[in-house]
Image 1 (cartoon, rainbow, N blue to C red):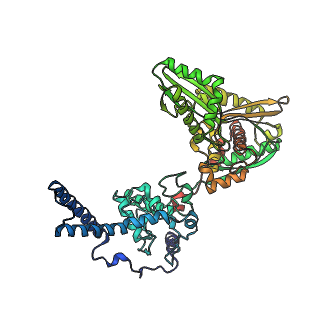
Image 2: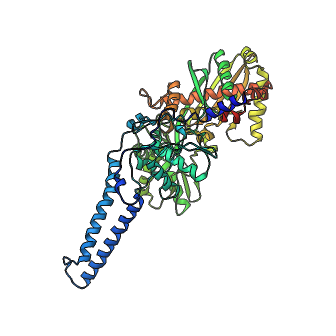
Image 3: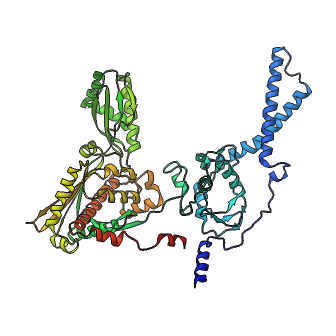
Length: 587
């Protein structure tokens, strides 16, 4: 029995070994095999020869110019130096220059890379279940050749500090050594190799060797690294897996939505799902978007406070707004300036621009428009010193009263009337208990804590889970989670009116992480993928209302669990695992 267990464990640990024959040697010859010296020594010899010969010729020509000797009169040593410099230059050009140009001109398309089977290398079929553990390295420099992968060198797999030895090509091994030695920068691997996944694998292996720590639990395979290049993440070494659960159907404004939530917190999806059920059984919720405008607030400085006040009066003058709007709107097809509100602090002026941004979240869009206006104002206010394009009066990724009061992104209110029977049978509590708890917890308790926009039970839980699932900026849950939850008894105390007011939901359905495959699928599930063709901005506005509806469901369910005293019991049931994770991982 014990021996069987050992055998099963051993087989599971080694299950990632190739199941088909692997070529241990490559019979193909290379041009470098004809060299009498190792490749790196040959390169060093030609480098030295080229610069030495060139330096000698420069010195000789300088002496001839000083002594008025004709330059075409050459000695035997000069002839040898010229031949040596030409020969070494041809070698170096052939080794570095042509290969570098080909890596740029003949770089394969993303479709070609995506279609390559990573388990087939030079006709040798590898079945490597653990290929996602191939560690990435760093970027290639011009000192390294950009060559296609050669036949792999397979070594016996050993486990050292939980780091399995993986199949790497001879070319990759050379690049990894340069990365580990600090001779090759990590950030340029993608541009030099022309293969984003290979770059990630090399970077990953170099990182493991540098730190001596294993990344075996971090997947590498199964992800399109081309899709994040220059857009979502730099220097990737893998990707983190976050489970996505579905809450719903959420009946909102007469439509049903199945809400994707990416989270590792037990009970969260189940709780939100219960809230959706209560809302659905009560006839659904209603959500209204009453403001839509992304903000950016640069800070400028003048020599005197009077000059700062002059610009404030100029900008806020309605007669000048149309001119500034025309300048601002040149930056985008969809960006439209809505308002400019200023705040002065001595010689410093903060200008808060609000802009409609279509289906994009809009930070880049509004920043470009602001830059256009600042350049335009410089002509009338040459003494204006632009300190920063963002002066924190926006305010982005920070709790701020200006967002709570003025709003940022989408401002939404969502409400529902939950029937008394549903409160008792589904939520397992009473209308009176919920109203009392909301007043003492969400309102009074938050006031006692000095909360800023946090007059709710756990709005950020739902906002963050939906944001991660749909490719939003998770850091913007700070202001997007600003929410006040209100509850009161209606219909002679029989039913419950519940609402959430969220003044700064920052979402988009184009750009950033929304274009990744998984996140795009979640947006498609909600029916808001991409830009709206009928009405610009309609998809992002709908997404904001869905977020508010999901928050309403989450607030309703958690408050009910608290009122019924079920919170601890629920978390012990759904947020605690009796499974030994360490044993599961080892098996």
